[in-house]
Image (cartoon, rainbow, N blue to C red):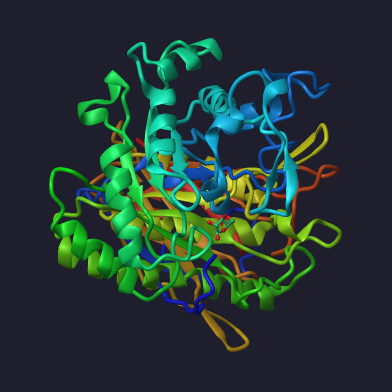
Length: 528
Ligand code: AHR
C-alpha cells in the first residue's frame, strides 16, 4: 500500500467530435498528429491485470468449483472467462500482492479434498480452501488466453520453496516435481512468462530495507529459475524486482545502483512500481457511488500524479541504465476508494463508474507516453476487488466502465506510439485545475492509425480539429464511452448504462473533425 502524498501534473491533449452533442458551449482543441514519427512500442503487457487471493477476487469471482450450478469449465466460471477473452489480457499477476508473501504453493496442489484449509491472514483472516491453486491458475490463464505472472514468496518463504515451485511448473525433464505435476493432470510444462520476486518488501512483504531486500533478491534471482526448454533464449521468463510505492526515489536509487554492477549470477529485467489513486489520502474515503463533480475533479487531479511519479523514478533509472534494459513495471495501479457500505472492509469492494473509466484512460495514456521505459502494468484488480473489470454476485455478472476502456484500447496493444501535440486547455472545478483533454495515437502492426481522445470536462463537449500528416485517411470511426453523470455505473439490473457506442468523424484534406461528449473516452481508427 502506498501511504505517500498525492499530487498532480498537467499532461497534454487532443481531438474529435460526437454528432449528437449540442453546439452551444462547445470548446475546440487543435491537435497535430504526425504518423511518420514513430515512438516506442506500446507493449501489450501494459494492459496486464492483477488477480490476488483477496475477498471475492478469485473465489466466486473466477473460481466457483466444478460442482457449482454456475456454468463453469473445470471450476472456472464461463461468463467471466468469455468476457476476459475479449480484452486480450496479456498477463495476470497472481497470487498477490500482500498475499503472495504468505502463500505456500504446496497447499494448493493435488486432489482438492486433500488440500489443507488455511487462513488468509493478509485479507480478513478468512478460511482459504486452497481449491484455487497453481494448476487452477494455469488453467484459468489458458482459458482466457493470457500469460502467467507469478509472484514468489520472499517474506515468509525460502528460495528453495520458490525454486521448487518453478520446477513444479516448468520442468520438462522427468524430475519428481515434474512427475507430481503430471500426476495432477498436466504432463507438459507450463509457460511462466514473468516472475515477481516478493511484493512491497518495504511494507507488507517483510518491512525490509533496500539493502536487506537486495541480499534476498540476489539469492532468489540466482536460484529460482524457469526450466521450461521453450523458455530459453528470447522467450525467457522475465524477473521483476520490488520497486517503490512512494514518490521518493531512495529505493529505486539503491536497487539500480546495485543492478548496474550485477554479475552473471543474478539479474532482474523489471522494477515494479505501485501507485494507487487515493484522492484524499489513506485510508481511502471517497465513495465509489453517489458523488459529484467535486470528487470527480479531485480524483482526476490525484491520478494525473502518475506522470510525475514515473518521471522521477525514470530519471534515476536512466542514470544507472541509460539503455533502458530494466523495464519499469507498474504492477499495481488504479482507484482505491472507500469500501462499499455493508461489505467486508478487508475485501476491498468498490463500485466502478464513468469516473473510473476516465481515470483508466488517463493512466493508460500516461503509460503509452512512457512506453520506452514503462513496458508493463497491472491494474488492481481483475474481478470484484478495487478498480475491477468485472463484478459478480452468485450467478450474476456485470462488466464495469473500466472493462470497456480496456476493450476499446485493445488496438493499442503492441502498437507503435505516435506523438500527438496539442494545447490541453484547462477545466476548473473549485480550486482544482485539470487539463480539459488528453489524447494518444498509435500505429498498429497493419499500419492503421488509432487515436484516443479523453474529454475530462464533465459539462462541456469538445470539438477536435486534428491535422494528420504521414497517413492517408478518408474517414474515421470508432467507439465512445460516456454516460449522463460522472458517477454513472453499470449494475446487474442495468448493465448497459455505461457502454461504448459507435461514433464517426469526418476527415477532409488531412484534417479530422469530431465533437466528443463531456466526460468521455473515444477511440477512433483512421480508414483509408
Ligand atoms: O491490491 C491490494 C494490495 O495493495 C496488494 O495486496 C498490495 O500489494 C498493495 O498494498
